[in-house]
Amino acid sequence: MPEQEFAYQQSFEDLGAPLHEVTFVVIDLETTGASPADCAITEIGAVKLRGGECLGTYQTLVDPGCAIPPEITVLTGITQAMVKRAPRIEAVMPSLLEFADGAVIVGHNVRFDISFLNAALAQLGRPRLAARSIDTLGLARRLLRDEVPNCRLGTLADRLRLSHRPSHRALDDALATGDLLHSLLERAAALGVSGLEDLIALPKLAGSPQAKKLHLTEGLPRGPGVYMFKDSRDEVLYVGKASNLRSRVRSYFSTDERRKVGQLLRETHRIDHQVCRNGLEAAVLELRLIHQHLPRFNRQGTRAGKYPYIKLTLNERFPRLSVVRKVNDDEALYLGPVASTRAAKRVIEAIHSAAPVRRCTLASRASPNANVCAPAQLGVSFCPCSGAASEAEYAAVIEELVANLTSRPDRLLAPLAARIESLAAEQRYEEAADVRDRAGALAGLLRRHRRFDLLRRAGRLRLRIGNGWVELVDGLLWRSGRADGPDELFATDDPGAPPAPPTGPLPVPKRAEADELLTVVDWIERNADKVAIEEVEGVLANPLPALPVFKPKAKSPARRTAARTGVAPLRRPTSTPRPRMSQIA
View 1 (cartoon, rainbow, N blue to C red):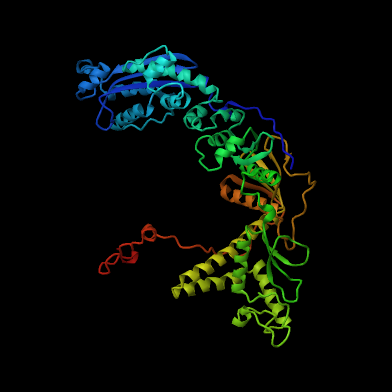
View 2: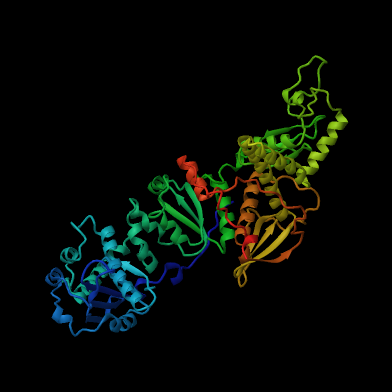
């Protein structure tokens, strides 16, 4: 599939709120101590800034309602006499909240100031501050740590020659913090920070060793799509999808701690993206690009060409089950693709446990004295080497097996479920767990086939997702568009008119098709509340009974602790049993 180029003009929503349009309120508090639990505010200073301009200031002393420690007076110069006639915090908070309404709170170690304000609001029965906040201390540590001995406000004011100098008085410190904010914004712009969301995330982003490559994310929009990391030779290193391209890609420089991310960023020289209309488009496009480029940093989707299948050889006199790598037009029954050869063998073991199909490779009994395979000797298999069943009798077994695999899976799974219960009752738990795993593998494969066939039998299916729509043909994404825009082809090549819905038995999907079918089904199931069916040409229904789920029972917290520590959980005394619901009046 050739890469598509989408012309996309970024909007302010894509960039986040532009910093020159954001109103900041820089706040600084003086207090009687360090803990909001048992200390109080003595002075509040604030300055309102927007676009580099000071819109106003706010300053007031506050009566803390308690004695000011001498060391605090020495540090700040605020005495008990100065706050004696000052207003209490309950009289100050309404005007402060009005001053800061709608603004982003800024502070140097802003968590300290917000913790005191929230403690005061809690005493007044008011909700906590909901405004977003920016910590100039965190920004300075990321942007200036190699230039200054420490990031104290006084040190930064001296080194950066700020217009205002801190003095441990609230308004002076707030004005100095405002100057520091403007200086930090200039430095942040070199890292591609142009919006508020990027500025809030910067303290984490700038901590990456590859922070200098943040400029590669400048053109990414805040919408759904697919991104591709490329190296210096323009080879695709990694393909991913995101509901917010800008936020997801920038997270690789901060919160993503996977082992290979550092190596990926070191080799990255370019980040391309393709905008999609919704998450389903993004999921399918990601998968198709992975199949096309096989990026070495992707694991999921790169093994589609190696998936095995389970084959029932119906073109033999005595059909048997085997694991194959290729689907041929040989009238055999194929199941799959399966994730791995080990999983395929587990499914075959489950079928062998429920149906007496041939297990050995001998076509027939060569002579009366020929060796008989172990399964035939145990009576669990009608292998031709034993001569226990005629060709006609064996054909009836295979006919029933084909019916069970295609339309009556309960006949295969019910004996396995009964076997699990029997083994558990005999306390043969390891054997029961083994049968459970086999049954789970078989049920999972059959369930996956049902999900594939559900979409494929629908033929052309049109779904509305948000203000757009998509069309699926045989379960694969074919076209998409917006309600007010032109249709766009999404397939690799123009398929012309979509084919009619299938009516007969469906062949197993090809490896890449199976990946896409599973991707589409998973996305629709996870986002069923966002999807509406507009049109369907075939049948979108499953008349078959639900398949059971074979999973280990979840342990209680006490049982999990016992399994980890080896100490049995305490039990209630038998003399005081817990009452049942029927015994409670």
